[in-house]
View: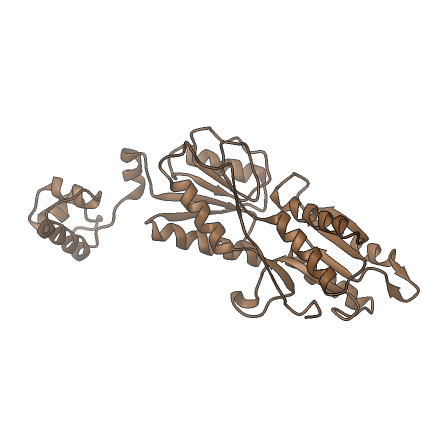
Length: 326
């Protein structure tokens, strides 16, 4: 009995056609309909599978895209990975996911792997200074690396403005912006910029506290304590850079004896839902995660890269989720 995997030669023998005909069918080159059916039926019967790696060495294309994410234990990243995978599958591509914990060495290893023709390009959500060749297809999410590398992002600036204006509309008179994130600049920084611009244009007092990744979250508790007058927190509306920050701020405030949303209203950013499709964790600025994924895939796989925009900014929307007084 033959123990080795079936080859194209075996498929040709089973189908009763020439080896060249099998090669054309496997590689998507048009042949007569009757020949195509014979080859596909024979391949299915024998369990023949294309060796994508060997095929890639010959064609300089693997139909595989590498995706760099900090992790998938955060609902936003998990949802983004899911939608990228689905968008690639619709284009007959596979996803090779690199979960890096933002480790620059791991991320650079992914770039080097793609250089060796083991993937056709990279979609990356990273804030590290990676070395990316000019001819390597790369699309960034939430960070612009350089003008020739397209970036896909939500309209973070508008999201910040919408959050501030909604808090003011709901009766808040002293606002705050609270943030944790990378020390390196990125599109997400514009959330705070938009928030501050809206507060200034409406002449509403506001405070800000921006922490970098790794800094102690207890600094937020200290921040709240510094703004207590008597038994009252002078800040009555908070915009947080992510839903995770909003959820943690709600817990801290309630531990301190303040009620959300009765005493303090909170708006987050992301639009994370419990179990992927149930209720929101907080009132939030919702990112179009599926559209971000699909746009990144479209930009990466486009054949004519001469007119690719440096930044694609997608609209966001506010949705109440229990931490505001609608």
